[in-house]
Image 1 (cartoon, rainbow, N blue to C red):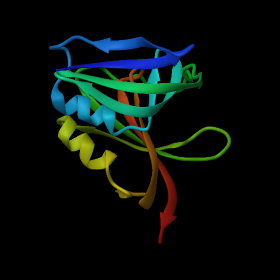
Image 2 (cartoon, one colour; image 1 turned 120 degrees about the vertical axis):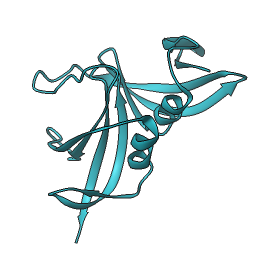
Image 3 (cartoon, one colour; image 1 turned 90 degrees about the vertical axis):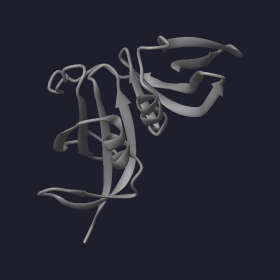
Image 4 (cartoon, rainbow, N blue to C red; image 1 turned 45 degrees about the vertical axis):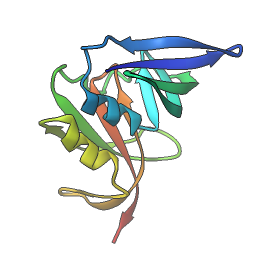
Length: 148
């Protein structure tokens, strides 16, 4: 299996990022597909659709905006799977409440698909959205309202 990202440009789909056939595992492909947002090379994209053509998975994304990395944001080492839990705010930064490392993408998916999440030492929150940040090697789960 392989995964490629495409964006529409003047009625034509152009590849913006691609994993070679053996560079990504099927569970990681599925984890990427569960994310509504994707940070790729300093740009924020929103998922439009998931598609497949045989062994080739394709994510069609829409460019939202340039998204330069905040110097205070941590860049995680590759070959580990990191999750950040951030409080979503309409304006300003989204503060990090907690970070965790999980042993595999299946464990990451358990968090990515939930509607409500318990964040240790912080409470239970509604899930707002999630993104995969390829520039920082992590998944980010944005949390909405706290559930009391």
